[in-house]
Image (cartoon, rainbow, N blue to C red; front, top):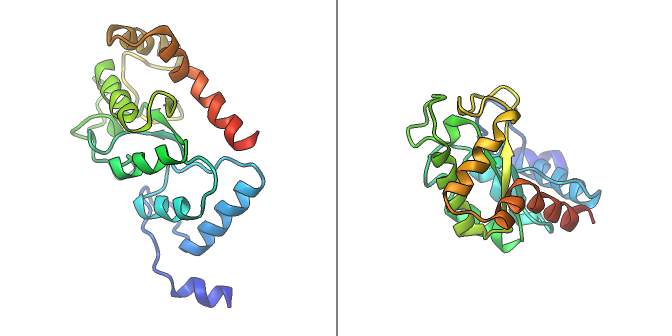
Amino acid sequence: QYKQRARALPRNPIPDHVRVFDAIAAGDAAAAAEAMGVLVDLAHLNEAGFWDVAQISTKPLVSTHSAAHALCPATRNLTDRQLDAMAETGGLVGLNFGVAFLRADGMKNPDTAAEVMIRHLDHLMAHLGEDGVALGSDFDGTMIPGWMGSAAGLPGLVAGMQRAGYGAALIEKLCWGNWMGVLRRIIG
């Protein structure tokens, strides 16, 4: 009966050629993960998959590395509606450092200024508040801003936050404090 019901559901197209799962199977997997205290990461889901998980989730919604669709319309970036739904759950978005997810033109161009990242942080905080945003990175092979280069370049982003008027307490939240908060809310 389960297989028959699952086959009848429409499939959700997922970007990046990730294998497509039936919505019901994904929902069952997310519910089982939550029951075990596992953080369910929404970062690689398309919008339909996001809403499938949001519908069954009882925990804060988290995307470990995403950006604002309003500023860069990449398929994995989060719409304002998604951000608002995440805020309602006390969720969190970690800012993706991949330039193709940051730039309005979607280009993989390492000449991407820290100010572009700050605009995304500002937009995310406008929807999720200061406690719902963090640094998410993505240092595993995606093209990041050239000035950053690697994790060793993170002080350059912190300097950009300071230039934008972010205070020390907010920078601490964005760099690590908000991750600790959401992990406590999810896994105890």
